[in-house]
Figure (cartoon, rainbow, N blue to C red):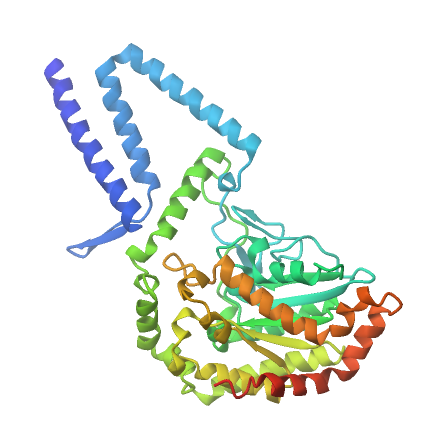
Length: 440
């Protein structure tokens, strides 16, 4: 009997060592896969190996202490897990919230939308399906409202909601007593046709006084036909999502996998040089950025922006386009020709244009502006710069409103009416003064 237990102990020791090596490898690399005789073996999640390691360790420990003590150990572990579950339910950290298989639900007009009243780790949405606080369609009296359209950069991918440039902009606009209500309508993966569709069908109901559109170069792509089938499922949580401890462990594993994915299958996140190589090797992106894509791509982008400006113009709402560059474009003039194209489109559509590229290039280490090597989106610092540059332009556009506090006898809404009357002339003069068309 003792010899059998000794053999089992040896096998368990080997299994424990192998599982520990596997867990360490996944932790360092973010996951990996092997192809053996046409069979793919993938190890991309830390959860299963950790659970197996824990079980193997417990079994080995029980063999060494005996059955009676082993029963006490198992009981203690179960009690500890129960206490941990109760503590997570009381403290309720975001890491313990259930994770949805998808943050989106199908939409006949937009292809997909954020699920309303969503709570998923650090992402929460309101009843309108936006990553923002709860709002009524009707604008509060005495308040100016800004509607921020955009994709994942506007949404604030991988930063907190308060750190997104839209929310930082709101803080700047309200810092001296002005009353601005800034709505973050950014949705990950959206592009120009969805910005237009959203404003036509939903966004106009907020009655904004200003519209900003955060543009990233891939907003030129995408068509309504391809977007309608992107999401198949609605609110579906992962298995055992009712167990907070399981959610915590799974979310922790996902964070580790995400943070180290550049070591595995996201080589283009490793450095600025590899990011530039990735863009240059991708013909679709390379041609677009160099101004050599199919002319129809640029025409569709312009027609959709023109339609947004036209709809906004019916309500005297100015539109402000903010171009957010990829890190591969910085200090790379060959990949900045798209900037000039967007600038010229904005001039033709009578739209104010902010190019963040030059401002980003003034930063000593541009890596601080992005989340590399974990992700290619802008960091909190990058969002801060975008917010400050946007604030400067808005302050010029609404200059009468920003001096209301210094001239109490003036009415803010008379100032807004004054701005709307001279808006077109101001845009023309401001473009010439800042030379945005000649910047490239």
